[in-house]
Amino acid sequence: MFVFLLSNCFSRVYLEEHFDPGWEKNWSRPEKVKRGVLLGKFRSSAGTYYADEIKQRGLETMDAHRYYLFYSNFTEPFDTRDKDLIIQYTVRLDMYIDCAGAYIKLLGPPNKQVEFSNESQYSIMFGPDICGANLHQTKVAIGYNDSYYTIKDNLNANKDHLTHGYTLIIRKNNTVEVKIDGETKISEKLQDLFDIPKVTTIPDPNSVKPADWDDIEYIIDENDKKPADWVDDEFIEDPDAFRPPSFDDSMEWVPPMIKNPDYIGEWKPRFIPNPNFKGFWTPKMIEVEPTPDPQFGHFQSLTFLGIDVFQSCPGTILGNFLVTDDEEYAKKALKEAFLSIRSDEIESFDIHSDATKREKVRESKYNEKDYDVFQKLDAMSSDDEVLKAKKMDALKAKKESEKIKEKKLKKKEAKHDYMNEL
Image 1 (cartoon, rainbow, N blue to C red):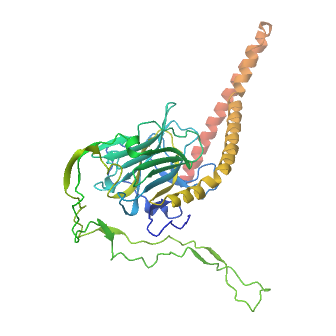
Image 2 (cartoon, helix red, strand yellow; image 1 turned 90 degrees about the horizontal axis):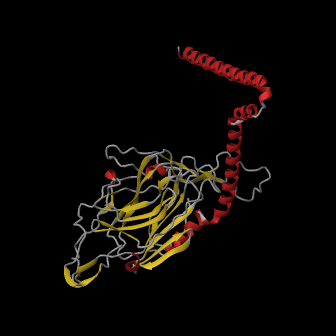
Image 3 (cartoon, rainbow, N blue to C red; image 1 turned 60 degrees about the vertical axis):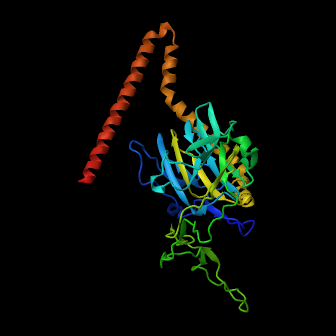
């Protein structure tokens, strides 16, 4: 886990996931899935090659031709109307990828997490989508009044087999920035990047929310207590350590600290619906000349991150998820988890790629061994037809003999397994 100080005391991290031990408790599958939808399985993995196995752990897709639905709740609802929104994560595609979505969605009320699906209304969609030779784009879409708006120009996504970092920033000043691997690819105003719907009414600036209006939807459950057996001490004194005989007795000896094997993580109370919640207060609306809606791209309440993709080939790894309102924190997190080890990952990939190629060559040579023998026999002159026929018959007889031996061996093994079961 990577820990940095936020840039200021008012900044918040609403979701951060590096798939440390115990990550499973932060993620869930929807309870209801549409009939006919086959869900694939995830696992925490850094894949078959990596620069740092811990830093590069992520959710790896495991099954071909499956849908993947998974979500994780924010620590608290995120109101982005007067804050910057930063979404960031890393993606690595499998070496044999054909068609695979690797984008994420941010959602909020009135969505129900337990019913999260590809039909759930989302607020933001962001990330790479790969399919075939022609489609490799970075999606940026915003939900607004039951419709979805995408960026006007296509933004390519990386289709290689290295890790890449994707960052989306929607600022309260209505500017948008998209970064890939920390480098700015798009930096525009919202109204220039999207065809923003125009409105004829706006909130009355003189309309004031009543002082007793409670618009906090979720509150901490005061009755939720930390379990007695919850272990939140990340480090403990090494029980096997002992004071060296040569240690200076005039000094206090302190055993070294080690990682606590029973460490579960920091305990946090759950959130429950606020019984005094009156709803999201909205001011009175007044008519104006048609103008782009200033609320487009800003949301009252984002509550969870969802993965909703289809993959024909498994092996995609998604990790280092971060949702925050602090740009500097996001920069530091990307550098620590990804940018600092890029060159090492490239070296690891090259070694893995060379080994894979050598293995394929060995398999190819083994499979072509018999084929080469037949080719040599075919090349013999017509004067050697008798000898050629004899060698052909001998080779065929040898192959038939090998098949018979293999069948006998399988029968023997099956009988052995049956007797063991008895």
